[in-house]
Image (cartoon, rainbow, N blue to C red; front, side, top):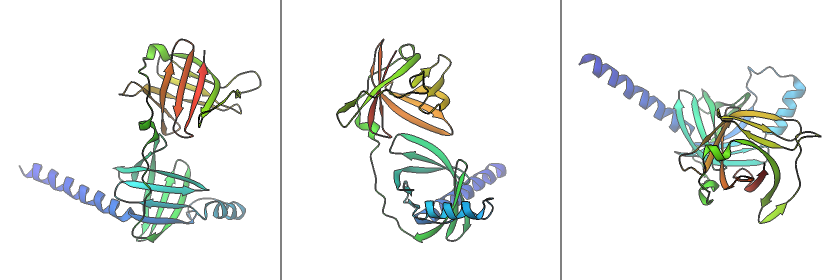
Length: 244
């Protein structure tokens, strides 16, 4: 019985600690500098300070807004372990970040291999809450059998306007997606970029989750037959068209 009470007490202390950590984040933060432990020369530091001087990060109890280099991102956030958080963007992707408390009004924010030190501007923040655009799109139910194979880029539709421009991976190969039977995903993107990840059909049978480079991106399948695949990409709110 004493052991059970001890475990419950430890769990309660951990829960309180996590809650305090969450409450500490609530408010608006602004770029202060590149953390001191980062090895960067004077010229690089000058460039970084110029690029990120307008960077802000705001939190309420469950939503966030991030503004970096002229681009804004909104979504929800949650604590998944000590110093680690999951950001779920309204643009259809989610990823992990690390946030470390430096002082009562300073944090180090780490996303993949980039780190910034932020200073708190305000204890409260006004968050723009956006609905995930995927939720507005009606998809078609799919099966792995129909999706498996190589699909070549065949244009896109954005704002009701269709573009027939064909993007190239290199001089001889069109941009393409390969969905393999073992769950591997290969994206031969423009400029000879090749991304390798894992694909999975979502619970709704119409959404694809593609995990690569420590990020999970979601796209909605709106057309799939033997010759054509159309994917709605919430990141740029467009329909990407592919053919076999």
